[in-house]
Image (cartoon, rainbow, N blue to C red; front, top):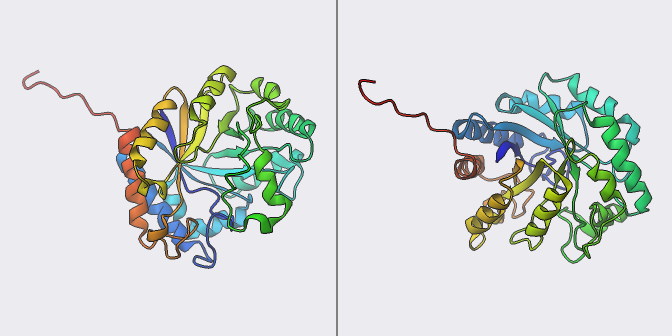
Length: 306
């Protein structure tokens, strides 16, 4: 079920990691070292993925390598949204992958790539097809973001929200299916690539869309998905019950699970983007989730005298 575990989400993005607390990412690197070691101890067969960087930045990667962050991961991940947030054209994808390959010998996965329908749904159609053309066969894993539009009433998980202007509102138009459940034109185009390009879909705590998402993904022929288990959600009522339901629903897929979000009471600052007071607590959470949802195979015992 779980083939890979990602350590945090977009740690070099100021909306997802508080740089006022950790300006050189040394605290993040410690989280990666401890969590990576804990995941590897819990199940060595699980691929450990460095949290998808956004922006794609080889200088950042070298900086955290200097802190030892790459010693306990197997894969480096990147995120890219060239028609919505990034300042480079969609045609530059091979070049952006090459920039990271030039500074590491670890495999590079594209764990979030997407084009929204904020400006025009026709742009998203082009984005799906061109992304597949550029990336399928170029990298081992690709996850399209996302299946569903984010409901307007939920709000996007960024630090500055409406102050980000149109960049904030684009978050609500990244899905292939509208908030009302109707398909956008790009859905059929994605279906043609679903076996080679997985889906990235966040599920909120007690997300009512879970069963519908699974139904759509099976209908589309999706094999690989990426989602998240939130350390912050772990402290909600019946958190393990919700985690169990989510992971059971996804058991037919090859899952890359993302561990992230600091509980307010365990952060240096009371915010989900804060570095934790004790990074070992985050590592313990990662290990517990692997033990629960991707336990290592136990060797068969050999009868005495056999």
